[in-house]
Length: 270
Image (cartoon, rainbow, N blue to C red; front, top):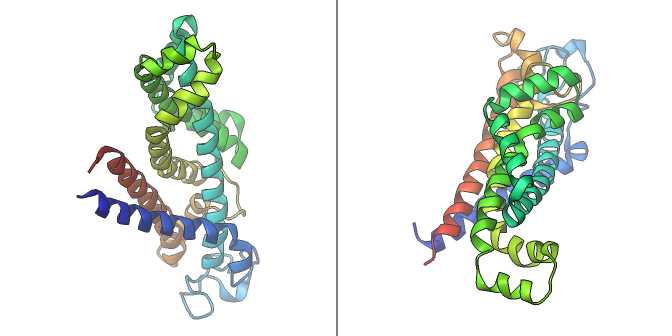
């Protein structure tokens, strides 16, 4: 695929992602019904003009809860990805630039953390801390920074051998200045691509923890907890499960495709 086609696809996907983020931010103003109001008269109502995606076992509007869940799920995911991006990148820069004992200690810690599957470790940490969005973020962030740290370190090891880095050192610039001004801008591209792809992974992680009761707690609207609540009566009201499930899948696919396209753009020169 040519660079022009990749640019068009990237702009399209980025535009869709922007619209999705805009909708999630304005969710309280866009919901057609109160997402937290129980209504015994319309329990498990099929999709209709009034309730686009039907109602759940408490008579709550599924569409309104999916919109509010977007704010919770996507918002928490973006915050966590941003934090782990900053922390992991800074750790990788330090290890790659200075090396030595600090690098050895952190790399051994990473090896230990990588020996356990990320989701298993997240479940263990969330189980210890208890339920709640903050604790779920801590549990998922426990290992999410590793990807950025390893990538930033490998990129830094390559770039710090360049002549302009030696020139900056001879010019009397500090290591922090060189890392932030000369190295970081040159390694930001691959790191941002991985952060975009990581959005989908973290989103599924949040949904998984909430589904298990270790993340966002009911009745707060969140896609994973909505699926967990509705699975008991899936045969009576399948729309209550399918709507948040489709939201998780489609959002994850969107950010994965966006990240893949951005990566292809970096690799294609002409």
